Image (cartoon, rainbow, N blue to C red):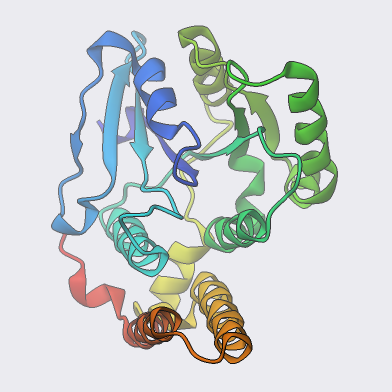
Length: 266
């Protein structure tokens, strides 16, 4: 029954360790497959029974900054999946945001994707978010702790102040299980709720451009376009950069005209 399923979405940039976490968290009995609707083709689900009549469903979402997929397309696919889940009553009990701790510097791309994530879930949902730091098994622990603290103090502090937790994934079954247990150990502590993006899509009848997340992504792409134009002026012209500008302008046009509700099928 639906009320016995604990649904957790796993977000993060490409290479953050999402799939490894989902695989280890679900164990040998996991089932990988596509979630029903055609608009969820890029979201995989892994299911694990807890043995007490409840089941955990982990949704492995596509990562941003994927070299084979554009952020605008990934965002649109994610919005379609969230809208479909909302329509059929499959709301999330929690969200896991995965972040490697291998970089000391917080790059602009990391800040942008984190801000996009915040606009997708919404401040009112932060208490149901767990920030999971990764790559502890491949990186110096002392440096990793410093990098984690840097982010805790500077870019995660608003989420933590609203109830988000920071946990570590050591690439082991034990650490994966402990992260899932955070959501399952106290029944009722993480009720199914709508993310901000889901609420806004419902409010604006599927017009993606009207959502705060879409406006955030639109601004990020617009900044990239301006940066490329500046490079073109400084270099005296570049066909490759001109093509990139035209491509990004196409993304912006598509983002501005996307209406998610037309693609939803129960």
